[in-house]
Image (cartoon, rainbow, N blue to C red; front, side, top):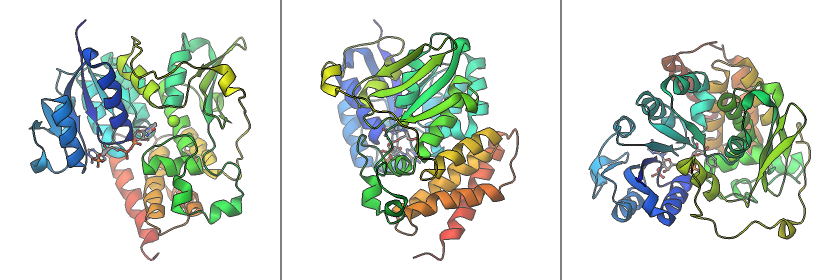
Length: 373
Ligand code: NDP
Ligand code: MG
């Protein structure tokens, strides 16, 4: 079998590092064309030494050793690639993803901002170009595995672990420290997404992501809290039959699925799944008062256009301010609500308009925090 040629954007991040662990286990299936990082050039150079890509990108191009420097855009227009794993964090993922789609290159998509900001542009473009977008996010990867015929699906059921504050009061949450917000009970992820998991904004962004990926109306996407994170999500067919995807809570599995799709390999699997070891699975309704972020995301999604751009940008800036110790955890969601209430939505924005709104909201959000210590 020919090796699949892959590039990884964000190889030094949580998803990127785990993707390389997967690839190491099935080295005979992959050839790495390019690796791209942000500022962690030391780790990137170690990865270059080990995986020998031809090309590499880092924000500081001068420090790259052992591979030819190229831009993210150049990586994504290189037709040597069969697939590109987009695992950078934030808006930086959007333009390269569009470039890859325009070049007919399949995408394994971890970067949820791409769909939250521009799902109405990205998904139709992928369809037009015959490009497969396979989700890495464990919930969407689960749904991708469950769906045979989307036209017969009635509802998507997205599970949420509930994060570190599931059993805490609103008061506890108000006084939460950064350390408490970063202490996720199930998943080890980058800091931004970990804070989003504590407010449940992550789940809100995932609802928007699911709407675009599977073309499902918002009132047919349901969120259920499932603390064990064993059922990764489910779908309900029109006849009431429910199909769920289960597995141990490890991102290795969805990453491997997304980059090897449509094939499957033993690869990174460490042990067999045991129902009796897990023993019980719990499910409950989300607490909508405590996790207002979830409501805001549904609202933004239903409004559409640049409302989700505003939600995403205001949230990201507020999360950074929280991580910096300038605002409290609850201020994140209040900030997003405030910015959304002031935003004049553009209904069918172009890509340029999306980036303009993104910039404008970030600047305005940062201004709100200027006087905070
Ligand atoms: P991390 O913060 O751990 O990693 C982010 C990666 O992006 C790093 O490699 C970083 O490089 C790189 N990066 C950041 N800015 C730039 C830039 N300007 N140019 C090039 N590279 C850049 O994040 P995660 O791995 O946790 O998440 C990545 C994406 O996947 C996010 O969109 C997240 O929402 C999504 N996701 C993550 C999950 C997880 O389990 N972690 C689960 C589902 C989705 P460097 O470190 O070198 O600066
Ligand atoms: Mg997820």
